Image 1 (tube, rainbow, N blue to C red):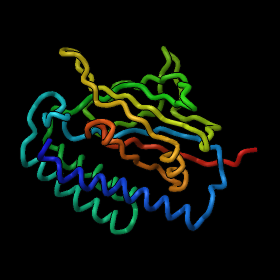
Image 2 (cartoon, one colour; image 1 turned 90 degrees about the vertical axis):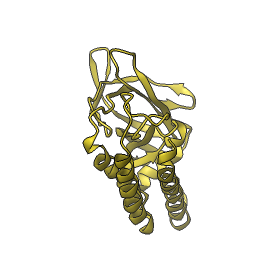
Image 3 (cartoon, one colour; image 1 turned 90 degrees about the horizontal axis):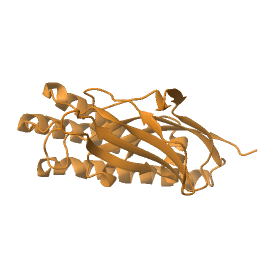
Image 4 (spheres, rainbow, N blue to C red; image 1 turned 180 degrees about the vertical axis):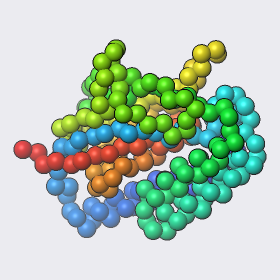
Length: 225
């Protein structure tokens, strides 16, 4: 994990830049004109390694892989931060994961659940099926039993305590699944996504020992009737 420490500095800068941009919106635009929103979960970004520094199937990543990841992440994230665009900065880290793992054969197989929690009350947890060999998993639907549901929630009260809770595991039929992380995207994050008007990668690495780096959400705001 020590080899990835320089990357964590960039990630924390991304999170800070995201807050700064959001604060700038609030200062120039005044109070938010909306209180309801449509929230869509689109996917996640799994960390390059487990918290112990090993690959997801227990293999050791080469130093070349890690150096390539660090270099690309720093370069691309710096470009996004220079433009005060946390989405571009986060995308830089995401793209660098793709570059770094080109030679990695043992990749994670993410699966899990996602649910919306409002004022402490959990909704129906939707099952997310396994996405084989993927650091950047996306899902279109979730399941309750055999029934499919879109990963979209409407009429979400963004002015209340709303949290999108994601739990991911790395599927392992032999030794048992390894937990990737259980993280939450909160109301502030969702309002920020609404202001961004595009899919926003929300940094969650501090909730998961860097095993789960980002949760991708899209929020469309609507006026309360």
